[in-house]
Length: 95
Length: 159
Image 1 (tube, one colour):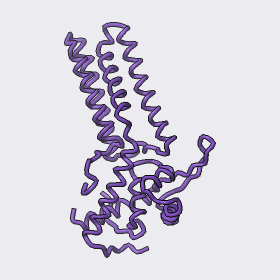
Image 2 (spheres, chains in turn brown, orange):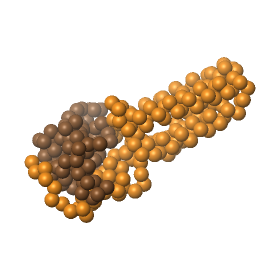
Image 3 (cartoon, helix red, strand yellow):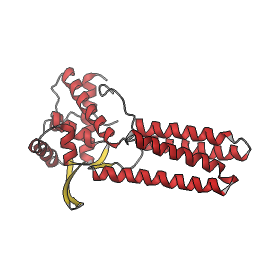
């Protein structure tokens, strides 16, 4: 169980969902995250940038089948912060 | 970065529900479609039944090898499809609940197969078919409820 630590950076609705989406998988493509969150490119880019600057997610641009693709993944720091934040939320709720 | 919380229980509950909903969506991305689930499970069941009967004829050995290779090919195909679709599944690393669940399921499946082989050699031929049915149920259940190695709940709320 992770140590409970509320993180205001992750707490923003879309950023929390980005971390939750990336947690069970190794990597997700930008377009998949965008489709799951039902947000625009610019909105997702803004949140991804904020999380990337905090070193919570890593962004990798790779060419696959002659198509440039952007892959997002949760870093170890990001995973610890996300799990700590979820633990803090559970503490607040009293679970 | 502000690490202090000043939110109420209701806001925290809403955030937890949103996070669990997103996590569930990610897990659902990894779940194979029902037809593929049934096909892989049927082939795994066939491989089990044929393996148990394999000591009695080379025909069953051929079926066992063919079914096992088909299961591997379908699983790799699904993994490739996921990558092309923009989803990369997590590899097992370290001791986690996901690793333990996967290892436990693998050991249980292996135990069922070995037990069926042993019992069939003892003359209880029905055990090969019972083991095949059990592997079908285990496999289809695991693909449906544990696509990412974690239990997938119907409710995305307070897990």
